[in-house]
Image 1 (cartoon, rainbow, N blue to C red):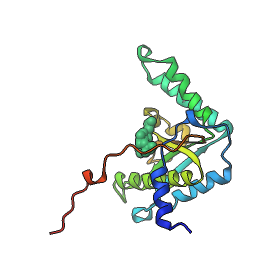
Image 2: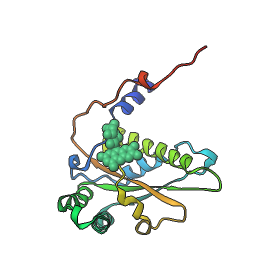
Image 3: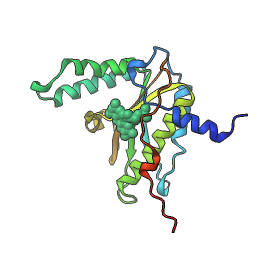
Image 4: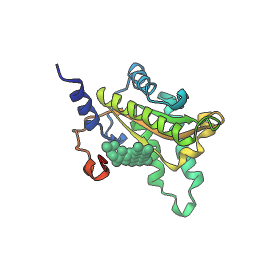
Length: 192
Ligand SMILES: Cc1cc2nc3c(=O)[nH]c(=O)nc-3n(C[C@H](O)[C@H](O)[C@H](O)COP(=O)(O)O)c2cc1C
């Protein structure tokens, strides 16, 4: 049997951001989406606030999200810099995805600084990305400017904030090597 550490390392290193252009039309089942979401719930969380909140868009819901994102782009872009190609690509990306999940955090200003809640959310999203990889689902975290204007559409609570969109789809991409500089460049050891 393969050692746990080898399995873990393989999944961590093999995970890549996979973009909607590479997604096939194969649907991701609700069961698989639930499995991915379940892994989010095991992220570390200071004071057990469990700040991660998600809105899952599939089927008709996905179209509504696409329309809303495109509308926000049009409304917030001065006519001179508006690009029809960019506008069309917004709905196209959603169409190519089997599912899009809004990544939100419930902030608790009385309990914790916002950064701790956002850090816990990011841990939750990484759990999702690794679980997706293990299930052969491609995914990526997108953070377009429009997310700061999605509050009403997402029906966010007070102090709940959107930090991105998690696009997901099956794909046929060959594994890509990660572009990273050596970890040694980012670590200083203090031993005496
Ligand atoms: C918080 C966060 C926001 C991101 N936002 C975007 C984005 O808006 N557009 C994009 O193309 N990639 C985005 N990414 C994905 C990165 O581009 C990607 O992780 C990076 O290129 C490294 O590639 P890898 O994920 O395949 O290792 C985001 C990643 C994180 C963690």
